[in-house]
Amino acid sequence: MKSPFILAALLSISLLSCAKEPQVKHKNNMSSSKENIKNVQVVNEEDPICHMKTAEFLKDTAVYKNKTYGFCSSYCKDEFKKNPESYAQK
Figure 1 (cartoon, rainbow, N blue to C red):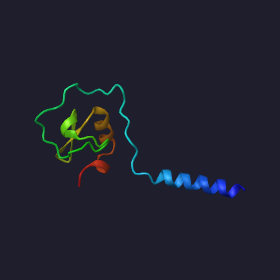
Figure 2: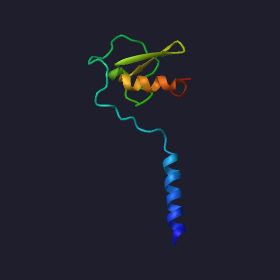
Figure 3: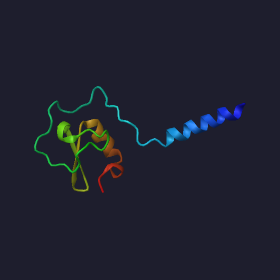
Figure 4: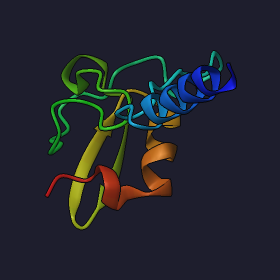
């Protein structure tokens, strides 16, 4: 009787661990300006953290390896700066 429950628990854990990347939930009090940044050339068309289109919601930027990356908020920029090599375009 215990083995079906153990099997179900192990299956659930393995399915959850195989999920792609977690969805970013923006904080309510994101500290970025109210206006979008205009006329800035960035190498990404979408925010590498939350995957929003940067063309419409570009509020912050960061430079990594001489490339400027655009973000929808300072929260996403801060997440990028924690581990940029995992998000940077090759």
